[in-house]
Structure formats: structure tokens, C-alpha cells
Image (cartoon, rainbow, N blue to C red; front, side, top):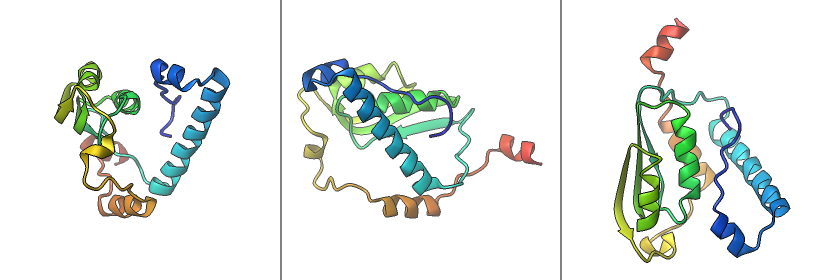
Length: 154
């Protein structure tokens, strides 16, 4: 985690339909936060995160189902003070795209569907990306320091 309190976005309809009570929600949430921390340590280690303050930030998602995780990502990114916040997604429910327009300065969605279903149905190959693949990509593209960061380091 990148400091501060985690951003938790609740989808009350899904929670109610799944019959999840508060203690179960908290336990699941704690497990997810631990997984986020594990991935952050594994993927980034001591690597500095990119300074996005004053820059355009693009949040990319492979597809949106309910929009809760995307909303959390947008809110967390917004807290880092980008000049402009853009959401780019290939496929999503029409209603989710409409709702997320209030979270981003611009939303780019290649296909939105009134009747959606599962994200994987829109892909020929929806295999998950492994931890090792993520680490390899991050090694190839190190975070760059902004001119503002470089000046303060001098």
C-alpha cells in the first residue's frame, strides 16, 4: 500500500445478494488488503512509485463488472493529484461506464453493453497474468522521476 488509509468501495447490492455480514466482509477485506501488500512488495520492492502529481494519469482495467475495484483505483489515483485522470477500458456494462464518468476526467471504453455478463466472455484468451510476468514488465519500464522530483533531490 502506498500510505494512508486504504480505499474500500462497497457494492451493497452484491454484499446483500451474497448474504455477507459485516464480520465476514471485514475478514474478506483484511485478506484482500494483505494480498495487495504482498503483491506490492513482490512487484515493486523498494522501487519508488512514479510521481503523477501534475501529470495525466491513465488507469487501465481489462474490463469492468460492478465497477467497485475500478472506482477504488480511480479514487486512490485522484488522491495523488494528477492534472488529468483518464480511465481506459475495453469493455464494460453501460451503467458502470455512466457511473464512473463522475470519478474520472475522461472515460474511454471501446465497447459498452446494456446486458453484460462476465468480462472473460469478451476475450478469446482471458488467462491471468502471473506475478513473474508483472515483475518482468516492471523491470523493463522503471518509474521516471519528474522534473519537480529531480530538482528537490539536487
